[in-house]
Amino acid sequence: MKKFLLIAFCATSIVAVAPVADAAQIKRACLASDRSAATRDRCSCIQRVANQALTRSDQKTVAKWFRDPHQAQELKMSKTQRDDALWDRYRNFGQMAQAICN
Image 1 (cartoon, rainbow, N blue to C red):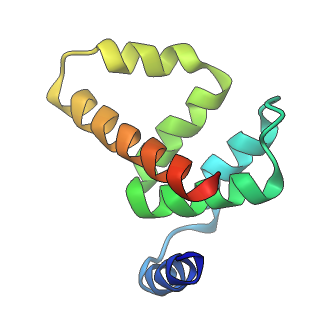
Image 2: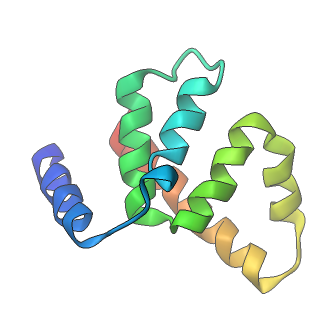
């Protein structure tokens, strides 16, 4: 399973072209957090899942939630379709990351 995910990640990495400055936002935020479970390997895994489940814009928003979780709560309580869609993508990302990165 891990080999398949690595291959899938590499394939999507070849297709996806993104500015270097935007790369690994989730990983950096994860490593900068003071959570004991935020190891380099786990944060790298979470970033790989984010690359598959979230847009670059989503990743930028979610990375901010590591510093200020209250922003996530505000978005969750929002009633706009755009925010609801982001929250759904975020929940999907979280479930995938939990299943793959633990």
